[in-house]
Image 1: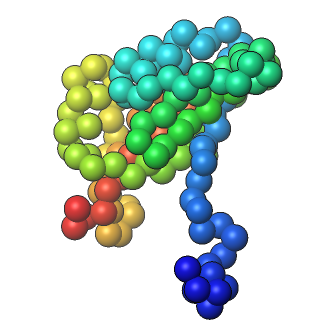
Image 2: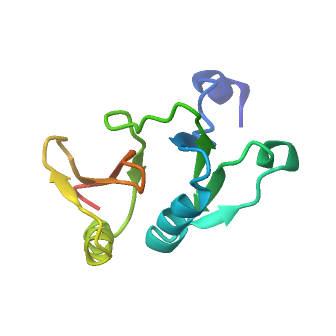
Length: 132
């Protein structure tokens, strides 16, 4: 990449490494069932120094979600990751078929999206551009 092209990039040009959500103490297995079994993500082994804190890391493609133990847990019902996906309708159907409540929202021009709550009521948004 030329120096001119590099100067046009911000220091944020690499994207996100992960998004962190909270879970109550001792609820890793509940989260594992939702994120791995329901959403279909893969568990990532945490480095030993971080594994001692508890929690769960999961990944799908380039998306990584870290679920960290929070003693004073309160679900994130407004704040949420917006997860770009392919096959939005198929994902919604699969989740609904597994008993997950899917709430569609048409208020984001140029995108189709829906929300779900994870196993501890953290909000997750799944979206796709309308032309995809």
